[in-house]
Image (cartoon, rainbow over the protein chains, first blue to last red):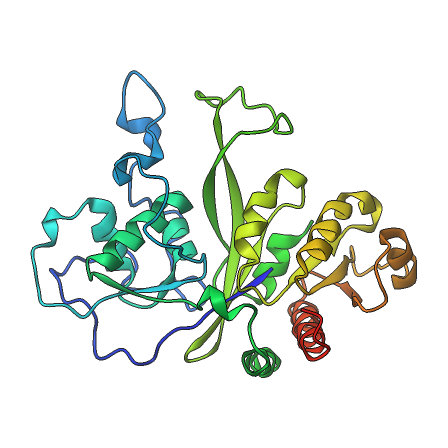
Length: 161
Length: 170
């Protein structure tokens, strides 16, 4: 199955100049594997509580299961160029998203690399976009299927790789 | 069948796995006795990425083919170019749900006959007949481990999507 996300090259110099925190993504280990294979940003749910083993994944969203607006899996997210501000008020999950999205990343990548269920990632990213913390690039659903021009570009791109 | 290998052979990143929490609304689901709360389970989906141009990124998502994962497909086909149904000729019937689904959705799809050890014992025409696929849908042998073979499959899919669009079929 193939989906499309369009990244932007319109972004100015480095996005989001918040407090420097050396994330595990700053130095890709190789071009092929830009993410650490199994770095856990958050402890697994099992370790967080004693009596019950399960921590509900939607706790961080305040119990909401629907994002403010629809976000495609392949929607690209990038931290907004922003005046330095106190980010410690943000949930750790949101801070991790900002750090990870210094470059364009898809919602699917956020979910996979930061180890959060897809539904949770969607809700947090939509919230952060509403708060002006991230920018989102995604195709408009009303455009329907990718048009011929876009398919031509994909085809020629595929032939070149 | 071989979908993670397929995605991995052409992706610029090692395929990643994302998980969706699924509410169980059907008895069609596997045994959930290992889950403390039996109303939910998680399903995994692998994906890879190819940066085609500076501002054009192609994502490939691999999902299991059974009925119970259709809720993920409904999500994925929005804005998708198309689908590759990877067929294991030893278990053709496993592909019926996927073929039914993509035919009904109108999403362009191609059939990739996954060869094992480079062997393709079944001819495309036999597979076409067994799956009752119209002649307009491309059926191609595909070695999921081989980058060039995977690329060729994707190229065929995009060409097919273009021809469907030109013909005004979706």
